[in-house]
Length: 97
Image 1 (cartoon, one colour):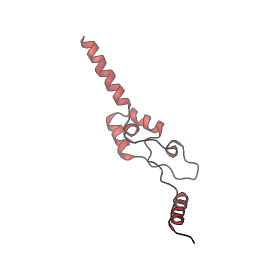
Image 2 (cartoon, one colour):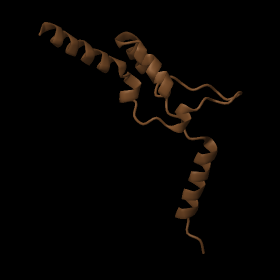
Image 3 (cartoon, helix red, strand yellow):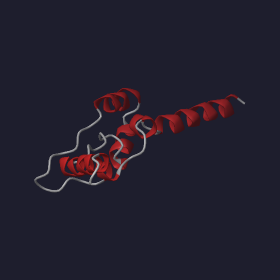
Image 4 (cartoon, one colour):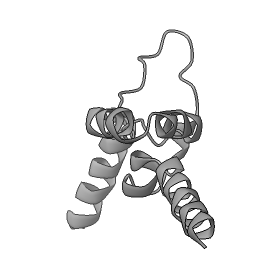
């Protein structure tokens, strides 16, 4: 009976510890987090808090976070897209005669 309980406790520990911090708490992973930056483009920023938590709690979780791309910060919208959105919003709000 003691072996059975210890196996359940160990298996529960391993299942919970294999889940990583950024994968669980980081939200939905975007396409830009999954794709590798092209040569000449800036590298992706890492979520430092999630990385430190993975290292301290269970380091294989760090591998899971990097493999899924959840360890990277979500990408900011490019300035070109932001400018187009702002231009369309101002044209919609400005009455034309």
